[in-house]
Image (cartoon, rainbow, N blue to C red):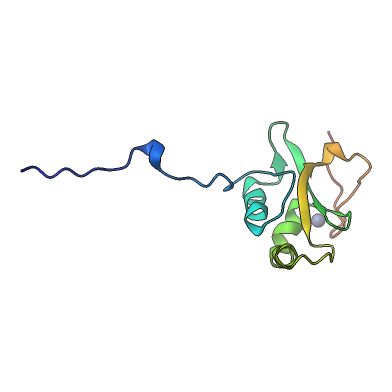
Length: 110
Ligand SMILES: [Zn+2]
């Protein structure tokens, strides 16, 4: 009797939907990590990602990556200390926002 090794079809591999991508509303650490994995630019369009915080500030991608522990803790414990990211938008959507609240880097508006 011949033994057959059944491998799952490629379409049956499970890939987390929230593995990578910019979400307009971020409520969990998993969603934040997915946004960080997606990179500093949103597609389509290639505009710079802008992370809105619950206190109305804006952070750049670099600062979110650099302070990921503080951001994740603020999301997890619902602390409105300026690190709680509530969503990701593009810099083009907020032309009045000039720079990152943390490092002061000016956002690229194209
Ligand atoms: Zn920054």
